[in-house]
Length: 121
Image (cartoon, rainbow, N blue to C red):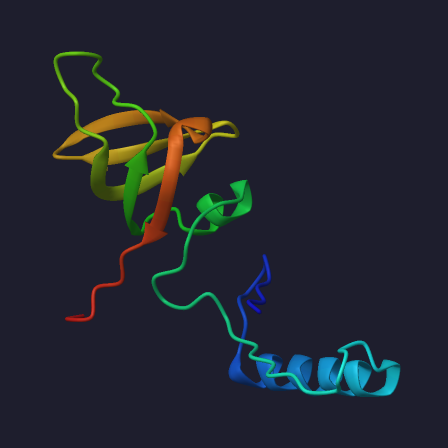
């Protein structure tokens, strides 16, 4: 199970508290048949997936990877994968700094998106 928060993210302590609370609830209510389960609670991590509008808003200014459902350039440019800096989230679309230019991409055309963390910094 992944947990996240719009405002400031999730700490290890948050994950531990949620895990303890859920374990207690699962044990007391006997919600798992047989009583045996393995519960993992974690944050989405440094290279988090972006799927909700607020995820994109929170990632503004960061490098991201995008895989699109369909190419932007029609038959002349069949590229569907991009890495660039997320400039802005604009409701139903985003602006991406890609090779010095700005691409506007509809959220509905995004198949997969995630933050790219620079481990060298």
